[in-house]
Amino acid sequence: MLKNVGYPMPEPESYDMVSKDKIFAKMQEFQEENLNDEEIKEDFYELLTYFPFSICERQMTDNLKFLITLYYYWKCPQQSQLSDRTLRPDEGLELYHRNQREFELYLLDKVMKTMEEQGEQWYSYEQLSTIFRRSKASIFDAIKEKEKVVKEVISEVLLRGQAKKIALKQLIQEEKQKLIELKQNNQTVAQTTERT
Image (cartoon, rainbow, N blue to C red; front, side, top):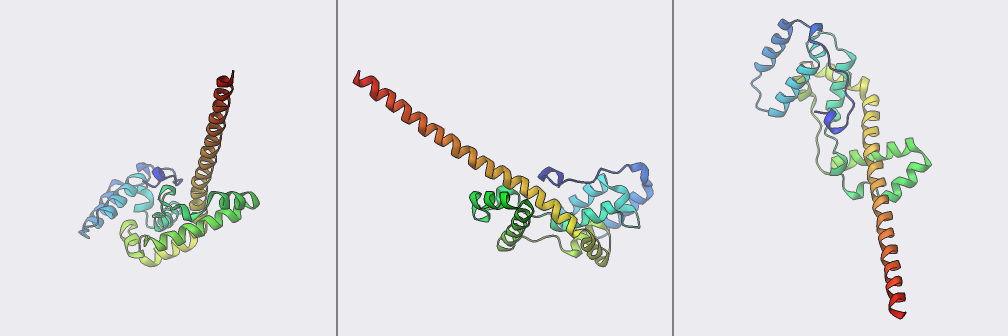
């Protein structure tokens, strides 16, 4: 699911790495909670499908820590959902040319503020605890450990999206200018033809 919105994901794990009994036990444990939240159910089963070893293993793998942290931040709005006030193309281009890293941090800050204004919420520790079948303390520790890495991943994804948006706006402006020049040339040719 996250890969579909542009986030790089760890490689899916093989079912050979974990016993079927562990998988069924984890499913049973999850089902005993009688959850009504369909999104949490979908996320759990998707994660179990692609990362069975990490979900079932007692020790937290690096993949699991990364996924927990990514899911904590995953509700960042897609580029198309960000309003134009997030970053003006000229402002972004100027900052980008000055210092790419500064631009990435600036963009991430703008996105986080936009999310707060729009009332976007990340998954809570409790929800993550339910999805990943870990204690809230373990969730907290995983997020602390991988937060910097995941924020960099998020900023790179958003940077690519913002760069595409800026490039598209520039291309549209260039095409508009060409059309205006073509129209002016056609009018000049038409006027010259009428005079002769």
